[in-house]
Image (cartoon, rainbow, N blue to C red; front, top):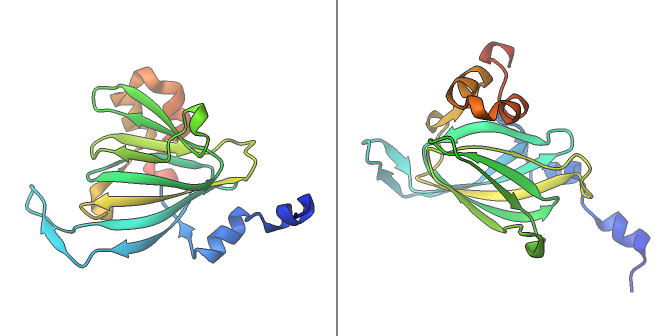
Length: 180
């Protein structure tokens, strides 16, 4: 049987995950690396050619605990791997706010997999007092992710569209573009 000290030493840190998974900073917050891009290309209903699917690792850590609001054109399936639970805030086009927690405590209502349809604003964060100091997921995007298909949620625009969610938007949206 292993001692508590050896178990603590074996636990991965956010810094080790960034290094071991070769992650870099992401414009929306957190760290990521594309792990897969399908060879197969397809035409979208809008007539654009896209990869049929892409996938990434995505890490939120104590030094970058928030994935700010952004909107993707494609559907995204998220898969929880390890660490602290990650709370997702989903703002639907009609203003409905949906909150989903990804994590491994299924008894507490956490989910291991989350699908966010294209056209839904999303933001995420890990708890500031989390046991691990990070949350790690993967995302699969279809049609494949292209930066041109992502819209960053700048505070002024988001507040104009969803004034009823002011407190959340002030906390989880991007400042004005000129301040980035």
